[in-house]
Image 1 (cartoon, rainbow, N blue to C red):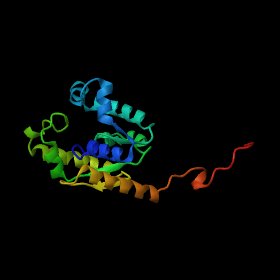
Image 2: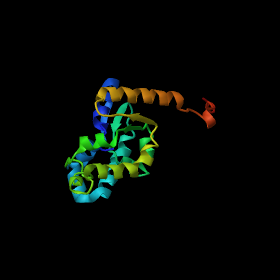
Image 3: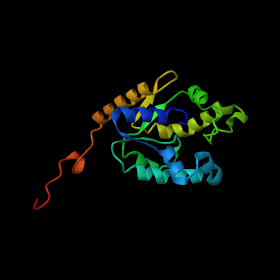
Image 4: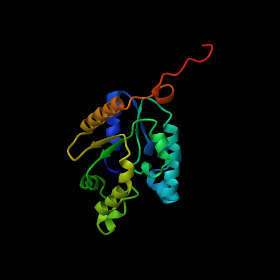
Length: 187
């Protein structure tokens, strides 16, 4: 979700692992030559999501990196193929913490005008979370993070969750049902 700390935690995790950090929102702004609010203003959410899907598909080819995506990347089913080229992590942060972090931040187009709506930012975030929760629940790893936790502590919880997920779901190499592939003829 917006405000959960994806970019900050990803930065801490990438640093600890000595991996490259790829922030999809930063890459989108660089590709478009405009900040995200300007992309939303010019092309709407649909235009932004199309560009996001293109950038994500390119990022999926990289290895040894931590990728921070926008919270809405899960709304497009076609993004899941790119997401699952790695381990998908959901930073699950309580709604009140998200609302405190996001406020009326003009850099977050989907909540920027929420202060003027009934229920304000918490109501808008609550609706977004309710709509996205089923998709978030499909993540490989879920890390609960609340107020007062440092990015480093959350990054450590993410790393532990990823290690556990990989141990419980080892990659399959080879043939059917994890069998070793048969040697190629003549080789």
